[in-house]
Image (cartoon, rainbow, N blue to C red; front, side, top):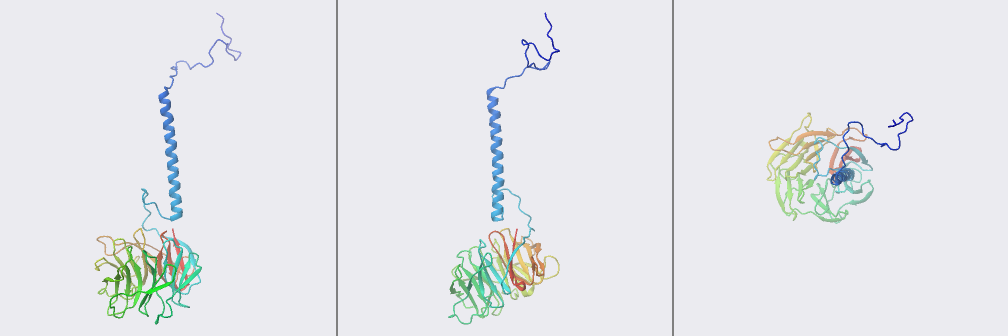
Amino acid sequence: MTTPDLTAGTLPQDLPRDLPPAGAPPEAETPPGEKDSRRRRKVLLIVLLGTLVSLLLIIALWYLIFRKPISILPIPPAPQAEVPAFSRAIYDLTQPLSVAVTADGGRLFVTQSAGTQETLMLDAGGTRLGVLKPPSTITGHATQQFVALDPVSGQVYASDRMAGAVYVYSAQGAFERRFEPGVALPGWQPLALAFDAKGDLFVSDVGGAAVRIHEFGRDGKLVRDFGATAGLSFPNGLAIDGSGRLYVSDTNNGRLLVFDSSGAQVGVVGRGPAAGELGLPVGIVIDDRDRVFVVDSVSQAVQVYRVLQAGQRGPAYLASFGREGTVDGAFEFPNGIALDARGRVYVADWNNNRVQVWSY
């Protein structure tokens, strides 16, 4: 038998060219069913990865548009102490006192306490769209101090303390009527205004024998009073949380008071120099994450609290934002505050003659 020549780098034609290593078991042919199973697993993995990427894109776009998490997804909530950052300012105002804003942020309503003392309707960029004022046939009109938006009708309510009046305007700023309490309120001097989610109107009344807060139903009838025995002094801010509790900035007493739906006082934050204590609380709002924003005109900041919890003496302090000054993000005796549906915070920066917008 002739021995093959292996030194030339070629194999004879009659020898197999792809030999398995010595001792290796022969390859088993993959059954057709297993090949199909592998193919299905690969397709399923690709579909799952594509779905995950799509969900991440949807979440990112949602947040960029609405600046709020998608609550139906199991996403961990942001820290409760999170505060907004300065975004921009609206100028050409004269000592703005109160501010209200539509849910989409497209329209602002601002009262002014100096200059022409007009109540302005502005677009999101600060361009003047109109002036809210009662007709000349209404006598005794002085200056409108506070504004609030009816969440049900979109109407704008403005208080005129010296005239003892609350005026009602359409969502476009046209005068409609003078609000009538429907009950005798001796010395009626309406100041701060706020609405709850169902559209009941809350008004702080600084006239009469005792300062108190009135709640009026959708029919304009008096529902109940709050704080008649609390010794209130010029409450400049009102807000209602999701449980129906009323939060009152008791301004001249330097307190934040909380009343339950029956009118009983159930919480307080007092005056003092420590973190979370107050000096001169004025405007107040509550967001949809149960955070209470209180403008403190003396500390030149907005204090942030968590709504009152069971067993607590008062709302728990979380953080604050702002400082004294004239630069962006600083305040000079701020007063009114408002929120839009995207969580943006609007602050009437009284002595800087502007409204500041803060966002996340």
